[in-house]
Image 1 (cartoon, rainbow, N blue to C red):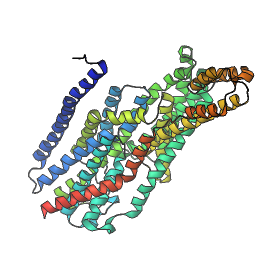
Image 2 (image 1 turned 135 degrees about the vertical axis):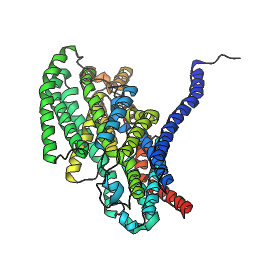
Image 3 (image 1 turned 120 degrees about the vertical axis):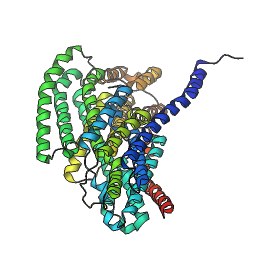
Image 4 (image 1 turned 60 degrees about the vertical axis):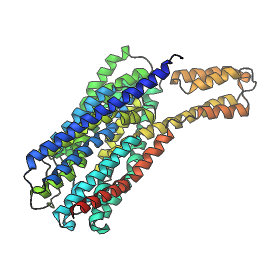
Length: 527
């Protein structure tokens, strides 16, 4: 019998260990959901329709886990992909700050989830409203589970909005839907990734030209990076004030921008001498400058997670809060600011954190490294563009999805890299086209293939060497076409682009159809 090769052994080991790991994840998820059932049964077992509330709490916990598995990857993926922190560290940081944001600052039901898509008053019967909310939760959760399995990060807000719309239409017809709100949500499919991508690409282009392409990038970093770090500190301070703390304290936009300005100035004053002190120990290269972005990326991942927990927890527990209100009071209040009970927030917070820890790594890797290659400077531009886009859009009243903004930033960075590579390739082609002779074809080919991966100083040296070759450095037209095709690399993996965009487009209708089916099934059992 032939010995087993090392690669075959690793495949066998992967197959034999995958099953037990999957079972452990399922067991932990089952323990959490069982705890939700026990708690809800203990607290509300005296109600006439207690089983409906228990079912809603169970589905809300399941929805929260799917949010953690899918949506949180956008907050920490760039930092992990750029190696600013490990996957394990990212999961711990995100879980802690997601839970903190949900419990501390997640105290209001998002009006769009509970009242913005459909009007509970148009339904009339509180029990029908309960069926609508349960159907919406289950349909949205199932769709998120499918999207996570497919490796497609999607908007959890769009998922629950589609769920509420579909179940609402199933119960009361198309007239119940607030179609202007749905139109604004559809517009965000284009606005969010486009603005996020353009801003991230613009930030990276400025960073490349002013710092990374300079002969002495570390000295350029001393001059320009404090401004970028100050901008990031100001943006995230404003972001948290508007999107996180706003749920605890009433902060006006001028106050939020004032706090951001103060934070930005303080950061600028502190980082400039700090970078100067570190300059002697840094390599005069892109890698040396990249080390300066490590702490800002970790901080950005934590702050994005806090704001995400504060806002998106309502996607899991907003409908659940509506069910609780309908079953424990005389009906559903028309007040869009009705609060979420603390125990409901805890279910959402724990579910998001657990879903991230158990099932989040796959999409974290997709966002961080599989769409395009991210180093720390590129990841910094993605994180900063996400904060700036959400702030500006909220002030202009434009509908944006934080998920689409973050992924749009990653796509923008990748397409900018493709554009810059093509410009460099054209510069090399022009140099070669101006010479005659063909004795050094092999050397020219070697230099061309290594050119696009070199730093700025090496590129200049290589172009100088090509010029010094004189008339012997020419290649034929056919060879130029072959090399140009080889140099025209795709920095964005198209299969991920098409899969993610397709998932974005069908999220609302897919969640709507599933939720409508679950509503009809529930109604069939109850009537």
